[in-house]
Image (cartoon, rainbow, N blue to C red; front, top):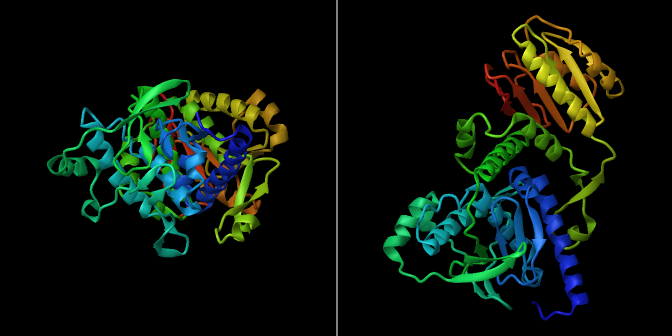
Length: 413
């Protein structure tokens, strides 16, 4: 246990929690791909952790506020992105019996290189975050593993080089997290504990669905440079998610409708005075969801029935849902106040060809910018040339066309 008095420890923990929260806001605004992934992880203070941080790659990032308080904001941002990197690249799952110490060194080299390429907005040659390095008052020398020799190499390739170069004993540490004692590996000079946890099949599915949504967030934000090279192609090759489409749909809506919004147009004055640009909080009383239902002749009765059930479920958790019904034109607009009655009768007007351009034209003319747009369609349609400036999710049947942009979730047959 820490020797710090409890009251003092609470003050330190509260101050660090505020810094972590601020950095999460900054990533969401400035680097949506990384911010989206970080948003899925629970940040948990762990005053007994003998490192700066640790992660299970799926649900938690633990950090020791007594140690992280010595980091600058830029270094703390690097630490957070590094922990997200372990989730992003599924480093635990890819170990496959390799020497734990050398594998964790290899993953740190790879992840740190990727994090160092996160750029400051408007400054393409300036790194956003700085790796924690130098003498730490409690942990000794921190020497993040970074080497230009490994530029462009994945962890597996780096590992093969390290095997031929390094003979090192494995440095292990036992930590108490989430009610259990876990023995992890600390790379020499590193700053976090790598937990040897096995990812279940469900965990792997969650990570893939989460990564797909994060890539989509990066695509829609006009900040595509934040998505590591080649990752979009890998995600596209995965195709259909391996979790029920209804679960992905609800998770996507939940992630898109956060309680508050953040904007650089209203920067946080406290951090601005310290020379660190952080978006300010813009309170949101309600969220705006628009659902477009394709009733063209190519949509099956079964698909439309399944869509109706999910609309009712969405309306129960997000009351401000507007439904646009149509095929080659918007034939029906169902405002939130009429949605319950509409779903009770569920008469969908349409049946011709499909064209989504009138749908997005309606949204623009209504001066709406929804938190999320959900298109329920087979994608055999025409679309605007440019993606809208809001998140788009397409829920499609098995036999579907190609989406011009946005995230695609395929319904089971």
